[in-house]
Length: 268
Image (cartoon, rainbow, N blue to C red; front, side, top):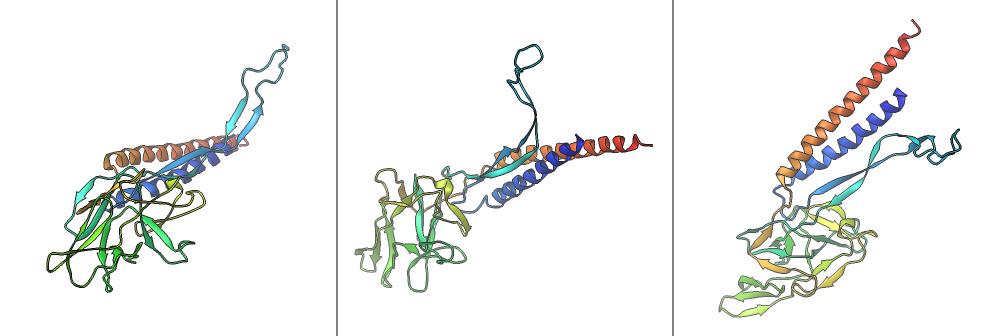
C-alpha cells in the first residue's frame, strides 16, 4: 500500500538527515587537531510477512521464497574512525603527537566521567598559571599523570618514550613526570564529550595503561601535532550520494501521494 511507502520513505528522510548532520560535523572539524571522523550505520526495520517461505503450496511443494515487504530504515549508530591523522610540525613548546596506538589522559569534571578522566589524541598542550601541562582547549583539562614545569626552566625536551626533561638556564636537565599512554579493547565504544576528549564507557572497556614505545603503544613525537583524519574527498562524495538518496526518498513520497490521490478520486 502507498501508506507503507510513505512511512518507509519518511524513515529514509529522517535517517539521511542524521547522516547529513554527521557529515557536516566531520567537514567542520577538518582543522581540529586529533579529530576522528564518524561514519553512520544504517539498518532495515521490521518486515511485513505476507507469505512465509517454505510453506506448502497447492502442488504439494514448498514455496521457494516468501513475500516480505520492508518498512524502512533507521540509523543504528555511528562508528568513530581512529585511523591516524598525518603528523604536522608545530612550534609549540609542549606540542606532541602519538605515532601509533594510544591516548593521552586528562582530568575532566566528575559529571562528565565516572572516574574523572578523559582521553584524547590531540597533543596541543600548554602550561596554566601553575605551570602544569593542560590541553589547549576552552576548558584546559590537566594532563594526567600531572606534569609541572619548574619556573627556572627555559626549555623542555620530550623523548619518544614519553620522558620529559626540563632544561634549566645553566644547561642542566631535570627529569619530570613521564607521559603515559592508554588504550581500550574497543576504542569505538568511547563516548565523545567535545573538546577533543573521549570518556570511558561500558562498551569501550576499562583503560589499559602503558609506556610509549612498548607493546601496542605508539611513540611520542615532540614538536608535532596529529591532524584530523577527515578526508575531504570522501566526505564530499558521501555528501553527494546522501543528498541524491534524500531526493529519491522525496520522490517516493511524491509518488505515494499521487497514488493515494488516484485512489481517493475513484469515488468520483
